[in-house]
Length: 228
Image 1 (spheres, rainbow, N blue to C red):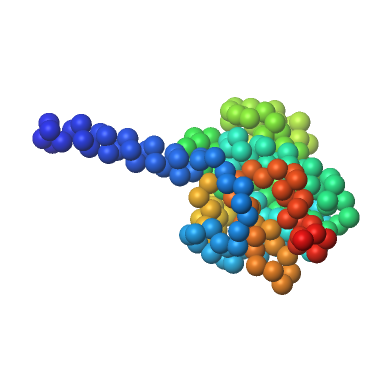
Image 2: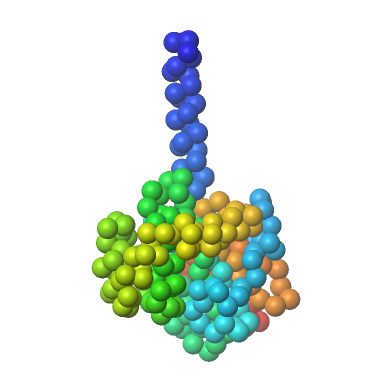
């Protein structure tokens, strides 16, 4: 390569890396919409029995979140959603569906964390999964070497089955995670947390960012016809 091209190309490469980081980790927006500019929210994979659901599975309002366990904004929104389910979900009107969107471009452990969470669910069920996802966020950032201890704290009793699942994650849970990531991109997600509020007869409402409890509650109330 000609020496005169080395510096310009290095600057260009650095710019691409920085742009990618901004693309996925820019400060979340706080304005709900029915369109995200790119993609199509209507392409969201329908909620089904294999999803991780907290709250009433038959709730009229469903909040589908695409999340990354290494994302600081996701940690804040995770706390918000646990509060929403504890309060607004107590009546059975709200369900929270958590899906994987590991931002491997900027978070080196994101995929492994998603794999660990899915292996907890696969080997120990939904209660253990929700305990584990909460611990991943509370203890953020979590090194993969700590997965075993966190899994035990979350309620995983068969450490061998969990370890085997994690060791073979590409074949045990990999396809599920990648399908959810691809669905997130298809509907327009370009960062995390990225959520859709779904209600019968209404267009999906996009929540692009770490919305506050008050903001989410307002959207839930509007979906239920309880406020203007």
